[in-house]
Image (tube, rainbow, N blue to C red):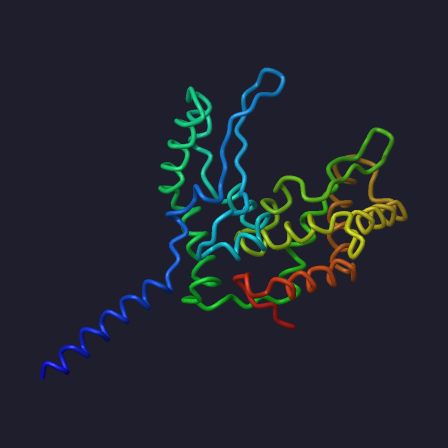
Length: 259
């Protein structure tokens, strides 16, 4: 009887220990990989929030080492800025850090996104989403933007700037897909392996081969739609996204499928 009780106690302890080892609560460690500081430019104060690589080893070290820009995108676009002005008024860096991280720990959107990321990658407690190449490329092309048409009729465009095209075209936001596409394109903006800048310039040149409108606003709208389609059919963009997925698939919360 005593032996049975002893075995039960040992089993319970091992179960509890094992359960604890399989959980990584990243919400308790935001200060380890996020920096916040106030800076000034032309007399105007602003905040710089960014994700940095961790120095020590932790349950999320590998995830962050391979996905710094990925997580930085989530911080920038899926955390609340409602306290921005209040943070700017704080008198010193210590009070800024303390207040910022206390508020971030209460940020339901960011906590939800980060918890889901950890659950699907580190803890592996939630199944990863299946993602088709069509759905991936649909998001990726939105980071190749035609911003305006000049008075001379030229197209002014940028890569990985703002979120206007995402917000205007996607009813349901996909944080992880967006972060992956953004970070992958930015990594290869002018890389030797996949130069996305060159691909963008080639596509802009293609726009000039078709008269897209006389009215500047109509021309801009058509040009942006045409750019999406040109980049959707860009083989180098597809190869780059597949290569980045294969390189980092263990740290991504989705599985890329053929269909």
